[in-house]
Length: 189
Image 1 (cartoon, rainbow, N blue to C red):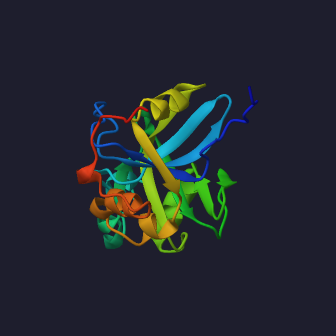
Image 2 (cartoon, one colour):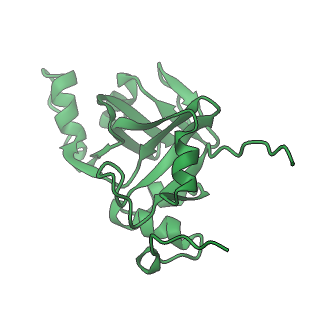
């Protein structure tokens, strides 16, 4: 028997299969921030909430009136874990108090990135989420084996160039797949 090295999905998209039963992930596209032997962490990138950056800034800077542009910056539901914690996935450029570099992207978790975005001095492209998606060791691999997800290469144009309602289908299309034609039945030989 061959010893096969694990294949991790860091810096890829997870596409929820049409039969995904978990309401936290049904019809979602998730960017995988980290995936290793200890588990995985991702951010759902296509589920905007009824919040915008102005709403968040009212809590963080109650004495300052947010710029009108903040009303047009949506806040996304990043996943069901720590839904009171913010994550900003953004293009490379300035670093903030809590920024980690990813492959061609950055992830910041400090308030200073939100203030920079609000003031118009932030990163060129950004997506703000509350919460994240987390998987324990082996959990994501088991879900993939159960046909719950597809994965595809990350494409920044999908997050930063398309509206949220087009992202899931665009990621699937990058694999040549039309999600509406898929079934929950897996083939077995």
